[in-house]
Image (cartoon, rainbow over the protein chains, first blue to last red):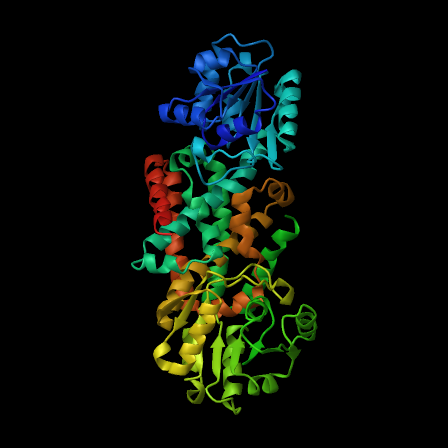
Length: 276
Length: 276
């Protein structure tokens, strides 16, 4: 079986690395020449082809590119003649707009997926073989995908040792806003708040593990995240509001020196880890 | 040399573990009987004594207890007859109120210190030998401490392979608000925002590394943190304000769909990691 990975960054590169033993041949597609070169040098893919040639030769097409690029790629793919029962997987971080915008004639080919995996690094060099191992793969609106395609996609996710969770795309986008998109905005806000301080270098030299954790997401790729925030604007703003409500509550309790209530509020927060 | 560790939790217990080879004898003091028992069973200390007996027998007294308890302990210690040149180290997370409230007759004995180390766990079982290894130890207002005591304290921190940073206590408390106290409030706010959602279990099953990082500090001990927030109220509120300003800015950019400006804002945040 031949796989064509479109987008040879962290997600696509790591997928290619982990799926070496599953596919006979892995084609890479990337419009960045230095990514093409790196992916070949790192042995992520067997060859690099142009988008159309790659897609036409593949049994499985993986779109590991930003959301808007996925939507455009699906339009382009819908005009090509694909292999019989070709499976298209997209790894977009929001799902509703992708599913909605998928051209009808290839809707059965598409299995809309979101791997709950990642690091703060990007590009082919960031690819790691175990990125997907033991992580959750959310698969959305499978009733609209073809049976053969769903079966093949699940087989691939099982090969990666991922836990498959089925969800509708609306629900997915709401959840993703809470556990991923809002926390990114928060992390960038922490980073910028510290950077605006006069003695930022001094502050940062004191940073222990807690601060490093809280500012790690602020290393993320701004171009990619801009596109995610754009696609999930409504849910993201709701999640930010919910977060702000809590922050305001804590601030009020601190201002009014309601220490026992603040302790109680923290004790509530502790409970998250009972369900995690 | 004999050391008396007051407070056998994560900080005190880890200190005792790491300093085994430095002291001839380590006495433990803790007013929680189950902590006493655990500390003995885990071999953190050689024996457990009452506060007064422990303090009186020690060349080095380590106060690894909440801030208010440190202030009270210093008052109690000031009424006892100490060993000649006894060194008192406190590990309080804020420093100004401790230094200010230290009784004059033992001020030379005290070397006010804050190890930039910790985990989200607490109690004697949380103690780990390498907690302090390669971490920063902030030492405050050393001009008020005795020369012998400063020398001894530095010798101990060097033995722990810590990097010593000297700072005044006011400056320390302001920095700590930014890199530690505000991020804790933020993490608890994220935890509570998710817990208030109807489908919290569902949301949490999707959590990947990013969310885990951002909510890890929300595991922290509410009683301890209440006391820290109380002591550093003014600086904490300033840091929360600075954070809120950034969050509001991001929210406005998202609302008004200023995607390029939002990307620029994130790019600014990326710079934190150039100085970290």
